[in-house]
Length: 49
Image (cartoon, rainbow, N blue to C red; front, side):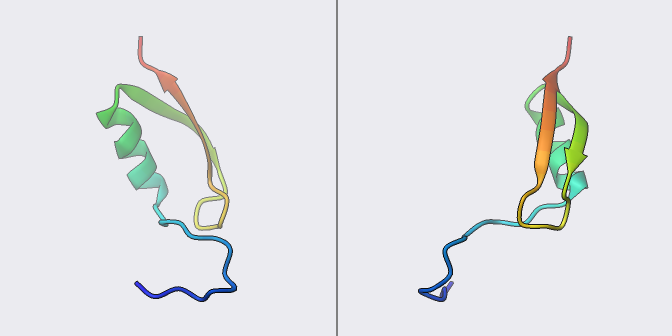
């Protein structure tokens, strides 16, 4: 993967479905999220009881 040297942000995009699966696979639940599809995608995971 080649990047632009002036680009200061590197990341991997993922969807709400990806985030929900990641949470479930780790024993958490995705309760809230904000910014899917944007540079900053905020996720709130809560441990399942």
